[in-house]
Length: 162
Image 1: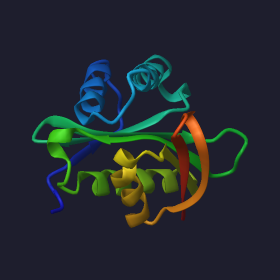
Image 2 (image 1 turned 90 degrees about the vertical axis):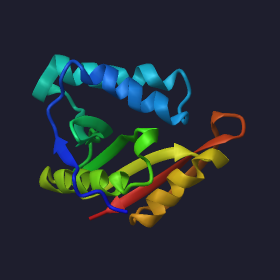
Image 3 (image 1 turned 60 degrees about the vertical axis):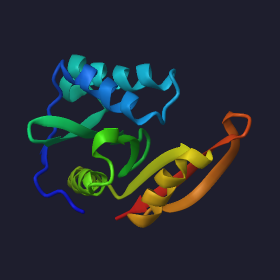
Image 4 (image 1 turned 135 degrees about the vertical axis):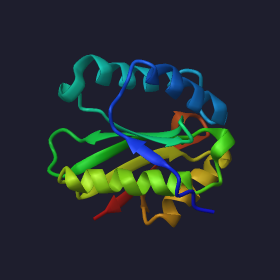
């Protein structure tokens, strides 16, 4: 079911550091060492503002931030963007929020001159829903590096072209 009561914002506030931590930890998907990386990106945006290479979209439902994306242009390219993070709080998964926030993210990337979006994820079985999500929303799997994150955990590259 698609949730049409979602609101989006692009501004990043200091409280978003803890909001992002809460969203990420709720999923049980990420390694402990990945959480500080996500928080650093939020802190970078807060500190540098428009000078930051990181862009965010936050999705809110009934006044609570429940999902976010982080993305940015890839240096040395014309119109290629990395999708660094797309995460929905575990309590709100399965409501179509991921579909809506990625549509908004794609809209903003196109507005910024984007023509290609690259998303990376793990090859572990627990990430099968993530890979299926990318397939379903029109990304194509274009590369895989076996044993990338650790032995038995490869990196899978998905690409969306506009």
